[in-house]
Image (cartoon, rainbow, N blue to C red; front, side, top):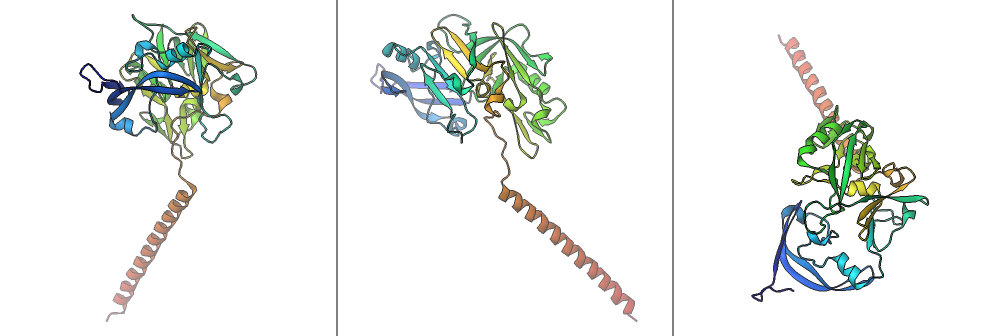
Length: 333
């Protein structure tokens, strides 16, 4: 563990978008993709907010820049580059939405990428990262020149800024744009916030994200909406936690294999020919609407049939009883 001036374990606290964690700072040697790293600083969590407790993860490994680092300084990327200069200063993230696809499973690769995951003629479409404010780079921030809903409504105006972040599950919009975005996407549908009823994926519009200098990345409805066979649909939007940034999270990265180029300060998104969203990759989805199992459907059908049978029996018995009382009255002297 790392100690402070008094000799006690040095504490740390981090507020994430989903809640807060607290604990103590520590240091150890780490193996990253077969490469050993010495002197890696990290936080040992002893408390986490309730929302974070439900996450299925063992920890968080930040891959942002040193301007964002609170405990792991130097960052993992800086240590990897310093201790293994032969490894190219980049990493790639491929996110699969099919847990049963062992051939093309999700992967994080340091120092390399594999465009064959997208197609034999796939290429990278780059957008430079930008630094807002003073000091070191923090996030993987890019300039967004347009965010078009349904081919007409531009949510961006002149310029927006977006963070490309695998730590965000959906597409995140600034507080000031979130309600308008949800309203445009769910217009004419029977919805409560981002959950819609009696709908299908085809009822939702496509989106277009325009990134500097001249890139256009469509996101099809099936990339950001999940629907059940019962007509319940979930739109994978969320607020960006009080930030003025848009966040291109897992929903976007599932549609576009992503390259983080540290050396050249740019982000690349892979397309096979014209960028068309996640059609090459299957449907998107970090949230799948729960389907009712076959057994549950049979149980529901049996229950409904039983209720109908009981009601029919009670109704028949009641009619017979009424008729019986009427017959007795007619026979009475």
